[in-house]
Amino acid sequence: MEAAENVDSAISCHPDILHCHLARGKVFHGDSALLGSKYPADVLYNACSTGKYFIHNLKHTAPELLEAADELGLIKINVPQGYARCSALPVDEDSVITYDRGIAAACALRAPALNVLLVRPGHIQLPGYAQGFIGGTGGRIGNTLVFNGDLSAHPDFEIIKDFIESRGLECVWTTDIPLTDIGSIIEEY
Image (cartoon, rainbow, N blue to C red):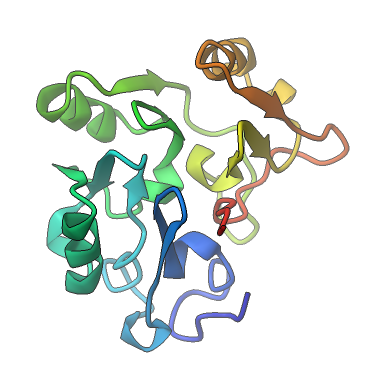
């Protein structure tokens, strides 16, 4: 992926800064020229979509991304977090994993049918920052959630793995590197 030159260099190559996987076969590609170096100008496209729910701080969402979500009939959930995709990992249409209590509370209030697994923050590397975020560590490819790094080292490993597997999905990771935020894994098909 080409770097988004207008944002912090530590996240400029992160897919979730410029792209949003809206639904199966639907990936929104943002315009890097519209991004800025400081929050909230760098979160225009950093929404978390499950294919049914669209989770973001809606006052900071790019209008063209909101329009794409509307065209797909996604249920919008306004959350305080602009880095929603960084902070939340979509599992299936009705499930996400997050460390962010604000996201979890907003989802519980506005979409009680959405299953939210709240995990401990931290335990994730992000070069250039004190810590990374669970949403940025992985993504779904087919029926598998793929994690970049050693998920088994996370203190909530067992509940994360059980949550994913209870939805009929597989969970894979590598043990040769620490769990690292790479700006998510976005499958485009």
